[in-house]
Image 1 (tube, rainbow, N blue to C red):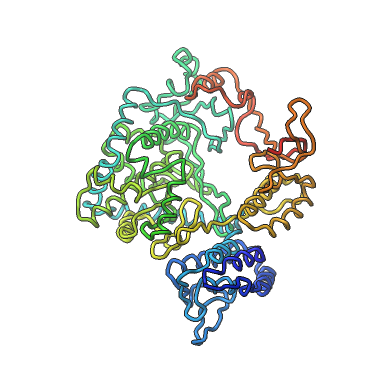
Image 2: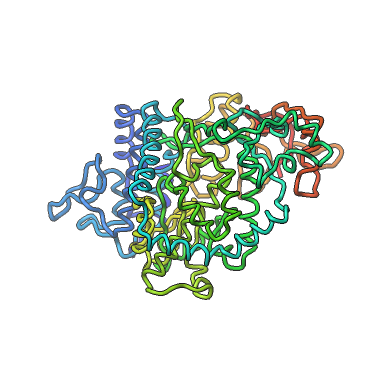
Length: 613
C-alpha cells in the first residue's frame, strides 16, 4: 500500500510546479521499519488505535491549516530550519507534500493524492470488526450509565431555560405540525399501516418467523395498537387468541437489554435490544413518520433516511466552496432526552401518546434495571427519525436566534440545500456553525469537534470525505484475513477489499492480495462487479471456462456466497398474519419463507460453476 501511494503521489507532483514528477520518488522504508518495530512492541492496536489517531490528527491539521507541535503525540518530529519541531517524521515524505516542512503551514495547493494516501495508510484498519477488550467494553457501559445520569441530573435540576423550551415548541410545530396532524388523523381513522418485524434480535429471543406467533402485549399499547387489530388477521380470530395473548401491566414489562457490538477496537457500539412487541409497533409508527417526511415538499430536502448521497453532495460542495460545514455528534441517540421528544410532538397530543406508548421505559444494564431518561438508544426503530427531527428543530432555533427573527415556512424553504440531517450527520452553513453548536450543547447534546469541520477545506459526511472538492475517501479493511474457505465471512470481505482497492488505483496492493487470496480460495477468476462469484474485478472485462449447455451463457468455476436462512417453520394463524398482513402486493421473494426466515447464523461459500457476469 505504501509503495502504491508513493507512485500515485509522484505521478501527481505537478501541483507544486515540479516538471520532473519522479524527482519526488521518496522512500517509505523508514516508515515501514517504524511500523514493524511499533507493532512488535504495541501489538495490533498500533494499526487499529494508534494509526487512526494519527489520521484523525491529520484531518484536524487540514481543517486548521497547519501542524501544531502537539498535533501528533507519540510520533517523533522533524527539526525545521528554524530549529522548531514541526512535521512528524512518520510518513514525512507524504506530509511534506501537504504541509511546509519549515513552518508546518498548509501548502497553498497541497497534493490531493498525498492527503488521500496519508488517510488510507493511517485509517484503513480503524473500523475492523474485532471485539474490544473487556476493559474497553466496561468503559463503554460506564459511559452509557454516565450519560443517563447526566440527562437525569439535567432534568432534576431545572432542565432548559423556559424561553428555550418555548422556542423549541414553536419551531417544532412550524417544521412538523402539518406532518404530525396528518399522522394523528391516520391513528384516529384506524389507517395505521401494518407493522413489520425487523430481522434483529429481541429481548424475548424470538427469531425469524417465530415473531409472528408473539403472545406478549403491553396494556399501554392497547389504545393505539390494540392487539385485536395488530396480532389478529381479522375479527374471527380474536376469540381464539384471547386466551393466548398475555396483556402486561407496565410493571411487568420486559426492559430492553443493553449490549455491546463491535465497532472499533477502541470502543464498542452500544445497542439496546427491544422486546418483540415494542419493535413491532415502532416499525409501524416509523413507517408513518418516514413516509410523511419523504412526501413533504420541504422536509424531504432537510432530512434523509434512506439516501445518503444528498449529504455527500453537500459535503463536497462545502469542501469546494467552503460554504457548508459538516458536524458530527457523540452519543447522539443516547443524549436525546424523553422530555424533549414529548415537546417535539406536543402539538399532536394523541400522536405524542402513541410515541410514548411504544417506548421502552427501562433498561437492563448488566443485570441492573435502570429507568431511562433518554428517549431510546440505538435498537429502537424510532430512534433514527425522532433524533433527526429533534436535531433539525434545534438547528432552526439557532438560526432564529442568530438572525433575530421568527422563521416562517417561506424562510425555511431558503435553507433547503444548506441544512440537512442524516442520523447524527449534520450539514449547516458555515456562518451558523458556532450558534448551532452552542444551541445543540444547550440541550445536553455533545458535538464531536474532532469529526466536525468548517474552517478549512476538509469535509466528512455519511461515509465520504472531501478536500477542496476532491474525493479523498479511503478503502477500509473490515475483517481479518481468512485462513481457509471455512472462514466465509472473512473471505467475502477480503475479495471485496481487493476489488475496492483495484478501482481506487492501488494495483500493486491488489497483486499482492491476489496471491494471498489464491492461497485460500485457489479458484479466483476475473469476473464483472455484477457477478455473484468471488472473483477479481478488472477494467478488461471477464474470463470464462465454458458455456452453459442450455443457455450458452458463459460459466466460470469460482466460490460464491451461499447464505442459508435458519429453519423457522410457521403455520396456522401466524402464517396467515405474515402473508395477509404485509403492505406490498408483490409476492415474497423467497417461496419458502414460511419454512425459513431470519438472518443467516452462519455465512457459507460454495464452489461451483456460475456466471462471471
